[in-house]
Length: 433
Image (tube, one colour):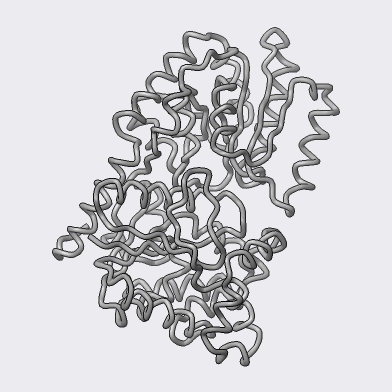
């Protein structure tokens, strides 16, 4: 089967959706299928071997200029290709990473309008290239914010369109009115042009069906998986027994401040535990002041000697990070659609402590354990569960083993790819989700 997987670059930062897309395409190719990862806006950044092609469609510079000026909506292709050069987009991405969703309202609406938007030229270029060079059996869009191009791609290429739902609500919630409502209405209207949707959890499928006004019966669920070959070799590292870890983007919605406060409170409450704290993950320019505020809280508590922060590590550094912690906690405030860091922790024999919302209960239920859940927003329970988890090394090891086995047996990229192929085949044969 030929699959054109169209993903959205994240302006040079590590993005869970990009990582998941790259992992899925890698696994589809390993199963003998012709899957191609096609970046839009900017080149993608991944900590594994990238499967994306060098060419970028809907290059961020062109998309922006076409939004701002009528002149750039009619420039010839050779001129557009110059502005789509990957090295230029990577350079611009260094400045674009601080761009906030609330500043992109007009552009978001235009992209969702598809053939009636200012970027229609870009959609036609992508469609022509797919039809001539790839001839895919399936076109897969990485998120609903790209659904404006579904009509053009389907009609011009003659292939059905699948759309993933993974984090669209975070971006949409950051849009000011009236852009938020307009964008949701356009995504809802575009659902008639998309053949199927796929979500990574039943919670998220239900939530997004209601939020985006998409028919629930069009949404399939395929739980995430990771490429275990990158993790298992280092999963037998000796643990210190007293290291708490945070691995996610350093930002308010991931709840970094919640964990900082809970760790400080626990250290003051039970000084015998001597729990250390390691944090890692992408720290964007717009969140550096936020991080400094958390750093100062640790400094004021005289705990800097037991705190360590490493920014945006590569694959080997990430593996060393997980090998150096005993419990992972990412106390998210927003509703996490995937939770890949949970799977990565399990692969490295690290149990987790997560809020009892979004995708986390489904992950732990499927694993039969692998850690603990606490009531979302209940800081006191978070502190108590941290103290309980670190009270026994055997307890940590038991939950770690359950999570580790779940990744080996189920939460792996091969299973995810097989279920995705089955999903495509059912769609092509006309079966229901």
